Image (cartoon, rainbow, N blue to C red; front, side, top):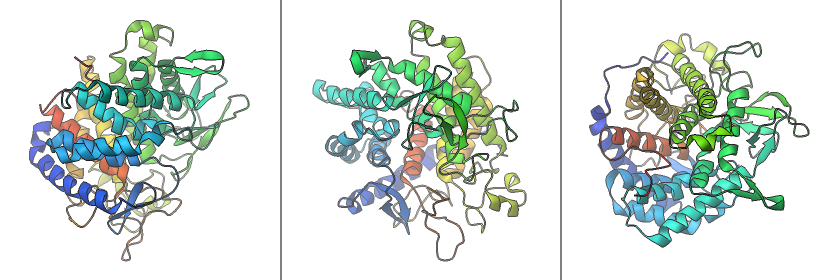
Length: 460
C-alpha cells in the first residue's frame, strides 16, 4: 500500500521540475536527431536508444507532443518549432487513421496541445493556424467515434484495434478526441446523412467501460475485487452480448494489468472535469448529469482506491497485480517496488499515468464538496518517487526520461539487460510523455499558469 506523504505541496517540486525539464530537453533533441530517418514511430528504448516496434502507430503523437509540453513548461521556442512543424508535416495520417482507438493519444497530444496553447494566449493568434488545429481535432474525434460497436443493452463502445468485439480500458483516455470534436461543434455524419452526437458516444463508452471493465466487489464473478480493471472486455458482435473479460498485455483476464488500471484512473477524472463545462441540456437525453457523474465517479474512485491498496509503498506498481513471480516477493506491497528484482518487472509508465489521475480526481472531488485530499497527496507522493533516481533517467546518453517502464511483458518485447532476469532500465514514449504532462500539471498547480485541461481554457 502506498505510504502517502500528507505534507507534500506542489510548490515543493520546484527544484525537481527544473532538473526534469533540463534533462528532458536534451533527450528530446537527441531523439529528434536519431530518429529522423527511422522507419516507424519510436516506441521504447533498447540499451538507452529509442527503437520502433510494429503493432499500431500510437506513439508518434507522444513524441511530438512531448516537444510541445517542453515549450509549455520552459518557453524554449526551439521545442515549439519541433512540435508545430512535425505536427503539420507528419501527423495528418493519424487524424484519418481508421484502424485504431488511439486518437486521443496521437492527436490531442499534438494538435490539441497546440490549440490549447493558442487558447491560453501562449501562441500568437492566427485564424488559419487555429482553423488547421480545429479541423484536425474535429475529424479525429469523428473518426474515432466511427469505431462503434452496439451492445445488447442499447448502449455501445468504441472498439479497439482488435476488432468490433473488443473494448479496451485504454480508450477511456482517448475519449478526449470525441470531447474536443464535440466542443468544436462537430458531429459524425454516417449513412443516410445520419448525424451522430459525439458527446452521446463519449458518455455511452464511459458507461460501458464502467459497467464491464471496472469491478466493484459486488459478486460479479469469483475474482470480483473492488477497483480491479479488466484490460479487455469481449462482446459478441452479432448480438452485442457481453461474453467475458480478457487481456492483451496483462497476465490474465482475472488479474489487473496496472497500465490499463492507470488509463481508467486518468480517463474518468478528465472527463468529469470536462462535463463540468457541458450545459445540463446537452446531458439531459444522455441520462442526465447526476447519473452520468455518478457512474464516472464510482469507477474513478474504485480504480484509484485499488491502486492505492495494491501498489508498493513508493507508488510504483509491478506490471500486473497477479503476475506469478510476485509470489516470490514476499510482502511486495509493504515496501518500495524493486525494479531490479529477479521475478517481475515494475511499470513506471503506469505510475506516471496514475499519478495524474489521482491528482485530478482529488482536486475534482474537493471542488464538489467531497474530501479528495487523500488522492491529491497520493499523486504527489508518486510523482516525488518518479522525479528522482532510480526512475528519473539522469544519464545524458540514455534517450529515455522515465526508466523501468514495460510495454508488452507477455510478448517479451522489452529489453532484459545482460545482467538481469526481467526487463528494467528502459523507457517508453507514453511513459516519458505522461511524466512530462504530470510534471506540467504540478507546475500549473503551483501557480505557474492557468489550470491544465485538454479542453480549455476557451478562446477569450
